[in-house]
Length: 420
Ligand code: EPZ
Image (cartoon, rainbow, N blue to C red; front, side):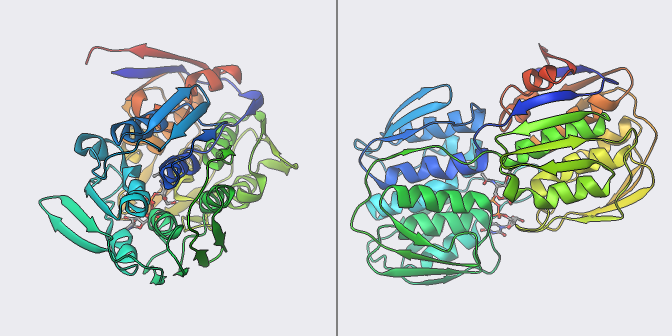
């Protein structure tokens, strides 16, 4: 197992650039199989989830060359419509392959991606969306067989604006003759990026970023070159790292226009936040002020993927604040470990009430999910003494060499390998 060991109490400062967004890169990788021609991707985040997705594509017969931030994917030799079970379970976003595989083969077999620490992660909305396009779905023993032989363009209404379901339906419809309409679609920026990618391949998608998306099916898509949008959650996490240590930071290559909700909350806590064309500058006060209430919502509301980081900031703020997690049913897994460090967090269901404390004390804690793990690292940057965060592998899923980035900003943090 790998752990981060942090010596807290140091102000973070400096300038740092964010890479491509994990949650844009993963659906874009899935969409590469919509064409048989090669696709060149640059500016990809060098993270575990991208490497795992590349593995899934190879197991389906695709040729994938992967060097750091660059990838070349050729779906020409793709030969299987069956998702490898062990990999489907390892990475939630394997479910994004459903739409593209159906588009290529008119049939698909996937296993339930399974839940994770933050919730059950059902896929009913994915399946109902595909059924609206004429796909017949048989579920048996955790395996889902989709028959798309009678697939057609159509009207899809999502009961909830699910990011993954919106992306799956968009990809399934890209080459379906006729016009598909997706209503109550998710509006996340990563969906706009997926639309841009599909259109770069010759697709005709309109309206991503709004609640209604139209997909005019085209006969075939061609290869292209593309770079996914920058990662707004990685950018927000770096801003939070400076904020919790009373520091000052410039985050460059940031998707400024997609970060207003996060920047507004940081200002509410007393940070000076300046938004430039593609950079965000933050100067933190010595002590943050508690915001009264933060509610996570689908975009453009406050992003659930920044909730854990804000809980860490709230823990050391002056005053009392409340966080309501409206998107996932179990996303306060990090609260217990923050309390071990001296925080005063009371959780009940989807609500956390936090009474800010002056400081935290270093402790041995464990990452239970990607963003909760990042929050524990942020708390360690602030805490007096040494904090060890076990489960660094979970954080590597979504952050590229997190310790190197933080060290560049002045943190004292090392990665160690522990036997247990
Ligand atoms: C995407 O997950 C992101 N992952 C998540 O980021 C992000 O938290 C989430 O969107 C919300 O923004 C990727 O893009 C790879 P949803 P996704 O479908 O698509 C329920 C991170 O840390 N739901 O919008 O799975 C679901 O249980 C990760 O980077 C159904 O009930 O999110 C959840 O409560 C974590 N049925 C809510 O909707 C379904 O069929 C939102 O899920 C699908 C979802």
